[in-house]
Image (cartoon, rainbow, N blue to C red; front, side, top):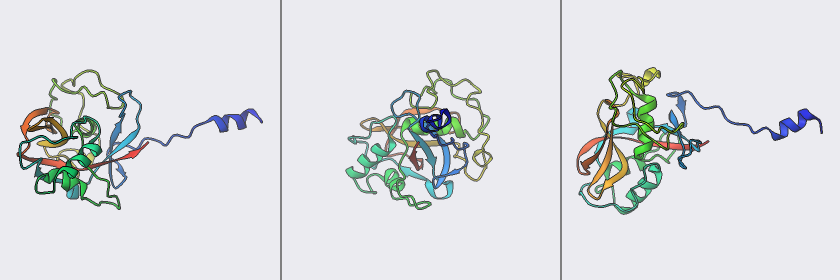
Length: 215
């Protein structure tokens, strides 16, 4: 076999990474995640369209424990466990995400803490200085072992996701599916990147559904 043929056989074809904010998988490409936390991407994250995948909901109608909603990186597993634990009256935010069908896809879910942080890092709406007490994320690609600086991340270059754009995140807190304590869950703000573990579940905040596509 010629050297050229051997080269072709040995070569692994790798799909190109989509442009941040571009149409992808029923929504928009928001970045990649490494579930192993080793910097190697195994999933592309897809953020749902603002018009159909973003709303205001409570996390839970009682400030009590939810078994199996503790993953920092696997929102799909968190959401499945939340949905299995109670109906949409008990868990409005998770059921909203789980019940969506957008672009022919029905595998939308409530993002985990580290998944939603990736969305902030790549799709930050404003030029506001970042909260420099947050930003580490072992599941980001590439992994981030240090906190934000005032200017990093910068405002996204994806025009539709910039503030007042058609797909931008509200300058407010968004629920994640990651429980922080029996009565509380993590929030991610898209104003300055802050994350809050101390909010009781029966408060109303934004939630925006995502899905993931294997790399």
